[in-house]
Length: 265
Figure 1 (cartoon, helix red, strand yellow):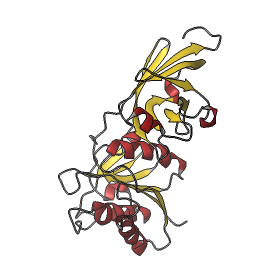
Figure 2 (cartoon, one colour):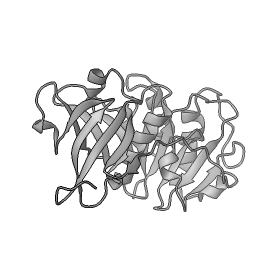
Figure 3 (cartoon, one colour):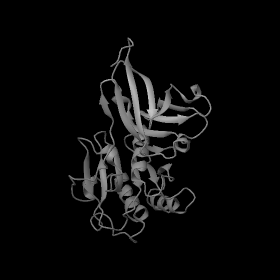
């Protein structure tokens, strides 16, 4: 079966940079299937890129190779990595925390060492084209990641915001906005205790009505709901929660819970 390669970058969909990366891939793998996850990650926003990768990569076949490049440190001493997660998914990316969602127990990481299995990059400023794409080609041809370089036991991990779960409430914060202005939070579906329901929600003290889906909201009303990516989100029907709140990151979110019988959790 032809190799499947995904691309996630902050290059900008209107720039020529994604095309150059695809050119390297297709020159070596003419039958490759290439899927653009996004080239519109906010520039240099590693956390936003990690969240998008977390939401999208699990929906692809496990044999896919994921090239992720949000790399403000390109050309510096930061390492380049190949990571294989416990499910067998393969990633190539800078070692700056972009792969945090896939660095759990059982993951394996190796440093991509130019000059070992790959030639040195042609430039210091475009490793997506000159280093990560060639690494993806090597993997697509059946090479084991260990051919790229030595094992790494200390890959960079983001300070991944987590929810605080206490009696009767869950607290978190907003992390990033999607193109609709819906704002993803640090509260995961797994943070909501089994059998509990959300009675109230608020964002920086502002009430947000808990709903099942966007269409249940009234125009201009701040909503909270469980999004398709398995995280609690803030939204405004047919408008932007990020614009309403004035920012996409750092808004404090609080959910008040009740049990199925109506009592406090």
